[in-house]
Structures are given as C-alpha cells and as structure tokens.
Image (tube, rainbow, N blue to C red; front, side):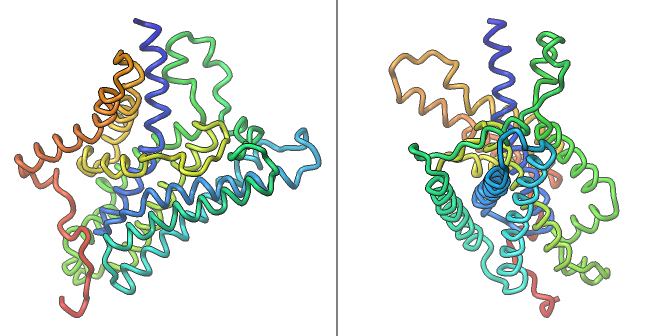
Length: 332
C-alpha cells in the first residue's frame, strides 16, 4: 500500500504541472476580461517551439559531449516563450484591437496551434531521419530533468517533495507570485478592475487595452511553459504528434475548479493529475468501459464545483463580470 502511494504521488504531480502552467496562464488572462479558449493551442505551440530550439541547438553541435547544459535549457525555453508570446499577441490583436468574438478566436487558435505543432513536428522527424514517427531529444531532456543531488538520500520525503526538475518548482512559484500580484498589489487591483468593469477602470485613468494585452500575452507565455514541461520533462524529450491529449482543456477546467485563484491551483492541479491517472491504479479488469468512466473524474468534479459555486452565488467565487465581452470605449 505504501509503495503504491509513493509511486502514485510523484506521478500525480508530474501529470498536474502542465495543468498548473495552463490554468495559471488562463487565470491571469481571464482576470483582464479576456476568455482565451486557445490555451490548448498555446501549450502545443510552446511545446513545439521548445522542440525546434532544442533540435536546432543539438544539430549545431559537433558531438553530444559539446552540449552545454545551460544553453540546452535556455535556448528551448526562449523559443517556447517567443512562440507563446506571438500566440498571445495574435489573440489580442484579433479580440482587443479588431474586437473579434473571443470564443471563436480561441477555438480557432487551438486548431491552429495543434496544426502548427503537427506540421513542424512531422517536418523535424523527417529532417532527423528517424525511422519511427517521433523525435527524440534525450540530451536536452536530461538537462531539463536534473533534480536536486541530495533528494535520493532523504527517503520518501525526497521522492515526494524534492525529486523534481526546476520546471516543477517554477510552476509553483509562478502560481504563488501571480496570486500575490493579483490580490495584494496595485497592478493586480487595476487588472481586476479591468476584468470586472472596463468602463469604470477606463474612467479612472487605467489603460484597459494595455492591461488586456499584457495579461493575455503573459498568460500565454506561462501556459506555453506547460507544453515545454510536457515534452522535455514528462515525455523525456520525445515529440509525437497529437500526444498532448486533452491536457489543455483540463487546464481550462481547472480555472473553474480553483474559482480563479492561482494559489489554489497548486494543490488542485496535483488533484487533477491524480484523477487523470487514477484509472491506472484502480483494478477494473478487462472492462474498458469502467476505465473510461474513471477518466471522466476530473470533468465530473469540475461540474460539481461549478454547480456548488453557482448555488452559493458568492461574488469572490464568480468569474470577472466582463469576461468574454469586448470593450467599446465609445459606449462608455
């Protein structure tokens, strides 16, 4: 029993980290009133851009021994952030500047992001000359997966708490910092004002479009790191088309589950990660239908939380009032 728990918890954390990056990025975005349903596509683009950066760097080396760990981490991360930033700028240009429908734009960006990733992923597989339909960047992945050297010496505590890569701790730090900024700083107050009532915020001298642009682009960059983590850490540097599954949509569901609180998202993401793999630990025999029911648990829990929060009707557990609505300054 104990061995099963010690095996389950680290895997739940590993499953939850992409969700934590995605949900934190989406919460930052939604606090400004922008509803970005393109997060799955953003995570996909972040992942493939990191792969492109790692591939270019590895191919430029005369030998694997010439790889510099700092550059092997820095280059894919910068590529990931740049690609995610461009996705955020595209979304803002369409929805804030051109005032396109946010839901339609987000869904289009998800389709675009998946197609973008599959196209370049397939192209890199052909360029590498691999016989299998996937690309392996094991040298770069080893740099991303490095853990604290003393974690293995601390027994179960080291395995559960300390035996993770830096991207895991970075996700937690970003979520906590985002929560502090949103709730405890003047910038966060302005951001929440823009999301609740942009007309009032505008009349108070707050640049509504600037906050929408900055929060959405920052949110996309954070979400893109979730794609980078999935490829370089969780998948051990292996890129395969359509391998992300529904993690991007789970990240959006997690936003509702956490009632728009990034700090709550830390533990909630680990819970979702555990629910996501729970079917692997519950005996169900050869009954595949039962396993599919277990896979529904994260979504069922989200629906239950949404119903409960709606019945309570507490203002602090509701989305921003202007979420998904375009702002026309002329109507103020």
